Length: 100
Image 1 (spheres, rainbow, N blue to C red):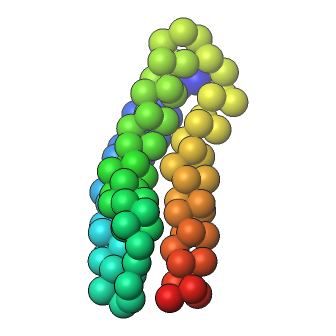
Image 2 (image 1 turned 180 degrees about the horizontal axis):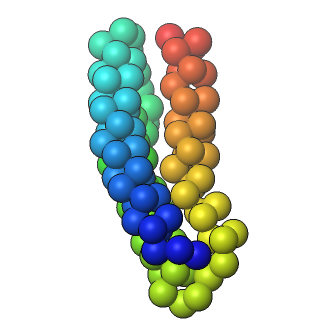
């Protein structure tokens, strides 16, 4: 692993965290404004506002730790963690939008 790629990945993950925060804020607000949601559904949307950007920070922490301990190039796959979480969130929102 090269420090250059770790730093570049970290910068991109921080930019992605901001984008995911804005994505969840506007999509959750649209869902809440569009129809009657249960308290559980609203709670999941509210939790997602903080959870999706947090996955970016977690993946940065994992990759940085693996860099410090001599991890290989396969360690960069951890940068995909927020993308998987985003796919789950979008599947939930599209399912929720279809039922409203």
